Image (cartoon, rainbow, N blue to C red; front, side, top):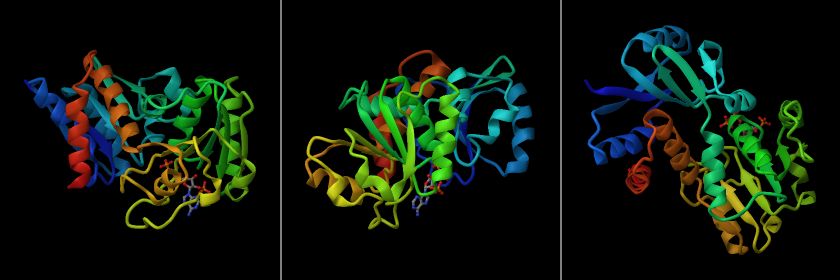
Length: 275
Ligand code: ATR
């Protein structure tokens, strides 16, 4: 019988995960399907109850349920608990265990171009995506500052991670103070600059310095205004789609205990981004 996987979220019209996993299943001739579980919030609990007994072996979790789902799971990995968000579920003989692979995806993408230990990292935004990335940067030994439009949310993230004894100089400030926070690595985690509002960027061009590493997690368009300005200033750029690719790599490993065909998954992802 075909094994069932999928992505849980709402809405899922533009989800890129099916393209990546279908390409991997095809490449390895696996009897597996990857479905879209597009659910309203009130359906979450009954869906998860069914998932325990049906042959749903695992699923990805995306907006808006990455935080809400924690309350319904049987077990949660320590890293996902620390981040406060689950993006991957494994069905272990009827018990649902939650993991977070977003932090891994972001770190893997960054580590292709830079080491993190001891580096000054500036994170723009303080939402769910930022929480995963702050966690990854802290455990890699970076010195992190979080800048957000509302200071309160950035401070909440700082407080969350302080409890974990991971702070290493962790600070919060507002985004309009950006010029006072020079950094080795800049990571943008909000949706500003995403299509159709591609003319927007939170970063004044004079902020960019030659040699700085710049990572914009927005991948639609593949080159945001922020990325174009960073490149023009001589920064090293990390493509946003890589975080998506590498978080999916880790999901595949959690479900199948083996490496996925990364080249095929990357080709499928880039193709889906063009469709
Ligand atoms: P996600 O889970 O994708 O990170 P989120 O939790 O809704 O999404 O977080 C969105 C982030 O984008 C927040 O940091 C938000 O800032 P506030 O906390 O001040 O709301 C930021 N954001 C959204 N719109 C913004 C805008 N127009 N200017 C600056 N920051 C913005």
